[in-house]
Length: 307
Length: 313
Image 1 (tube, chains in turn brown, green):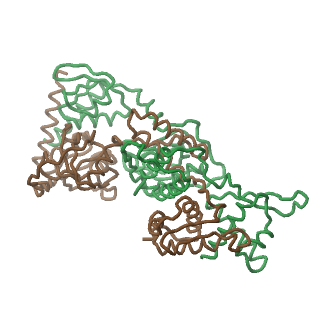
Image 2 (spheres, one colour):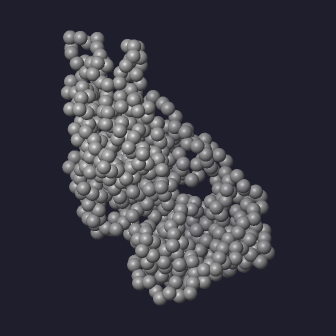
Image 3 (cartoon, one colour):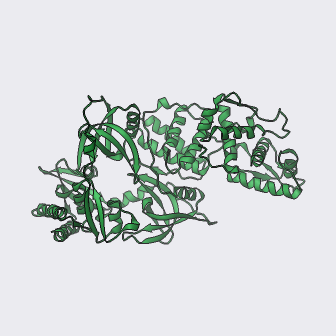
């Protein structure tokens, strides 16, 4: 443990914050206290020992802080001077202001009481700092979705989700048992057993439009191996707009070659991505995939005739 | 190291507890830890003052006795030292906790955690039960995210390499006004110093380090500045008409201004900001979305499609 940096300054900051925390949490367990400050128990004991030597000038028992922690529970007395928490620094204020904006946007529409309450906090925080109040955080999905997924993960229970699949452009309702939450490339994904597909599937969180708790279906044999469907290898050539191509195909800037060998789980995704690149990308192989793209482009052109 | 920490804490307590300014000699006499020659003590004290200031503790300097102006006095005002959010409810503490929790594992995790510790020391019980079950989360932005937030707070310019369309890395210097996140992307907005205009940058397009440029002048953030307002007003300049097959292209539908039923198709009007992005989006939907107007965009799509047929045929 002991993840917090150990410079004299960071320790001083921690000790200054420890006093008000103890004053408002008298009798807290040493173990809990160490966890709350993200340090090891032995580090916490060292901190408390240092604090024990501090107090008002004079430094007789009357002026020193009175700490007791040998029983595994910590109490503090005679610490009135430092008993109030320190004011927030710029970084902390920014973290809270952005967080609050996200909370406001995530609250259910009808809870105007809570929104007003949170706005009042934004006003107070920005009035006390040099930070402009208008830091925006707009959530990518309804606020309740994530908390439902987190609780389903804990309870190993099922959820009914309404999911918008970007590459098949369909909205479907699925019964899933979440297995894992993961962040990749700036987006959050949930791995889940999908009872509609009878396999594990990956869902991007911001494309889950709503979620609700659902009864767990009768155990069915899950063809997990089936989920590992074969990867489709293909090769592209970049003609223009490399930044968009790089972002669309999740490429690394430093490995941008003329012809790039890639893989994907889905032919449909490849076809749509190449079309959406509007000519800045060309499929150079395999031939059947190139022909599929040509056929798709031809079919769209037909639609334009007579429109 | 403990000795130094003890001294800093003792100095803070002494300066907080005093109602009047206390002089350096009083501090050396009464605060534990100042030892050695006068010169050593002086050096210690100067360093300690700097250290406390770096921790955000404001030390006031003043004269405690107008007759002896030669000796400066020091004190810390409790009003400046202590967190004061006025009267605050348990529900509000819970809202602040949720705001701090949103950073778990992300860029400002450490700052959010220490803020939470301070909030929990206010002696107001957090009333989480009064909130609906939501768990909003902020995703990690750029590794130098803190450089931006510190620069906004300190009104310092920042400089970075930004990837252009053609992947050229251009140096941009801005006066940062705000950071924001939308659709899982992070943005920083501010005044582009070279162009003299407001610009918004996507953090994932910043190539390499973000550097803060120290300057004495600083700058003002326009009152009521809103990152997304500027984008919105520009977006309303262009209007497109699209035909969308029934039940398809949900994302495009959600941006529609008007929808007319044409039977097999719906005709929608929408505003757009970036023509090439609209073309990409329409093409992504294949045979399900056609662009009707503006004509240049429609001609552009037909030309692109012919190009694709030719190169892949």
